[in-house]
Image (cartoon, protein in one colour):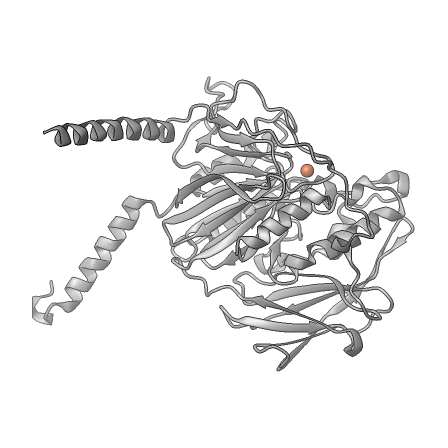
Length: 486
Ligand SMILES: [Fe+2]
């Protein structure tokens, strides 16, 4: 009897807890402002003579090696590297076993100046026709100082194929940045989605701007030479510096970090899309024209129509400036892009929009503000099941430090926020589920802090059930004798 009473009590407690949790999920009301206060740790750039920026040994040895996806579907890769003494070889030797290179590809080389800085010889080589889900070994550089690396191609595009992405933003080159990149590399994620503000070299003047782009290239090589980093540009890539005679935006960035924009018929390397495993990733530029009829607007309108959720169920958008942000820093800077694109994101059921820019972490509920039209009387974001989750991960650890002041009280759209350094991972399991983590750096330890199971916006449970039921009926019908089929 007592045992039964205990069970009943437990059941009632469980019911109450479920009700509270479900209420939190279904109704967007102000979420959590983390009480975690990060210990002071100076946000200064790592000195140039530190081993984090070590120049590889050997005359004219390749350095700043990094790779990115080279086509729409993941069967091509772009390998980039820099030589400093002379142009040297443009060749990539590659194959499927270590040290045995059955194939070669020939790249291009270029250099440029920025004020009185003269860049090294920047090599870029597009390799196409790769097999899916295959480990490739590659070698670059002249024979006496050649360097070897490897990468794994993604699995064939498939709606249920698992894949793990990392998300990093506003990285810079401080000891906090180093901590972020090291923690990221422990996660086993396979591709980085980078949400802008790379080197923070624009915090320097004159010759040193180029020097800090070089050190950053050597800094990220530990990860970026072995797996693709999908690039988007931030304000620190603009580098409009008229006092130095530098007035063309994005010059350093565009010379060094190529993107496969032509394969999606984009007219600019600053906005493009790639499909990888079970995800369709759209990269936007917060600092290029995006209002109606501009090239970026026209391109996005077409690209969203090309998304096929039967092939790539996960639709992810990257941009630099967040559309939903309750930090004092950069508050409402994303409004103009929100007004232009938010209704599209809801219409096409984007799963997540990742952004950076604000040096803190924040996650929104599923909300939209698409009904406001000045006279509608509904100017506030409201819960919207079709809306994406907006996540700001501008906390890679650059020299500008953290954005510590949040708006108080926490707005209804904000689910979780914390001013700490860190990075995120999105582990796609199948077409319906993915596991998301935000990992706080916490002075040397990787601490998973904000985690949840993400349900796909298109393949929600009801749709999945319908599909399974349909497939089941098909197989039942198929197994019937021909005479009994209707
Ligand atoms: Fe930024």
